[in-house]
Length: 363
Image (cartoon, rainbow, N blue to C red; front, top):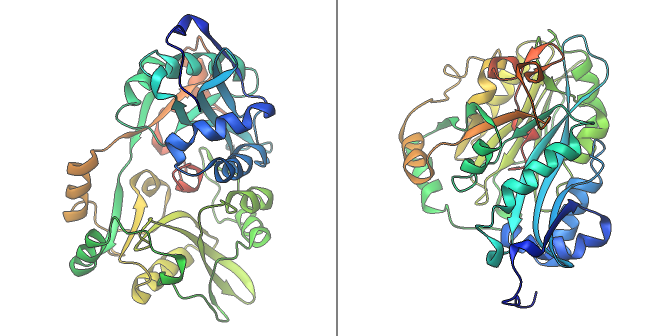
């Protein structure tokens, strides 16, 4: 991108929904956020926004300075299901907000957010932000977002493993160095293959229906979700009599030494616990973590399984980055208390969500 003319000002700005011919420019702008080159960023954009089976009519809002893209705010859809519902509830996740350095402090982020509320209000009822940052948090608050839960983790680890993780935190090794060992036994499988149809079928058989909002686990969603161009996921499956009884999906930290439980489900009330215990015995990662926002909707006794709510890791992370919230807000521009109810569920209460980090664009 070339240099700005000193005569260009914010009065020359124009905001509108993204359209496909702008993809090369947006991919170039996103180098400030995603780091990769234009071709790599286009592949991620294509997967995240255009191949998403629940995609919105537009991936987001762009800011143009004359004909040049200087801002982008992305919104990707995630499917949820409410109690007694058949049709999916699509919730928009705002993220990937990027503004050309010369145009920062012009209020573009908030302006694009306000336009998104007007543009998406007819098709979506709720925004769920999972990746706010300290610089962006004031803008979200200005837009009316409320904190839903704190982004923090319960983690299982030994002190020696924690120290190893800390010492290698800045490393970015190749996937060949990952310690997770794939295997296929009669009742236990570890693989990089998302067995989407089996997971979706098992989700339909889950033991107890969730009384709030839960991710809609369909084969189409699984097939799309775990094709991220830059990430690899590991799938742990429990079987009995040839039929899947439970699964746990693990995403990895950049140094490949920390695992995050992105989704987990079973139909017998025991398979997830057995899978997690086996992960820890195998020592596949130095640290195994689960979002605290997922704990209330899980029947597993995480403390007995070895997960700590406090400890050295939590203190280090709180000191280094602080703790930020998950944020929620009705899409309607002029919302009132009625708009917080979706499928009869009060969406301001994390206890009404079966939150799983596979819905987050952090993974």
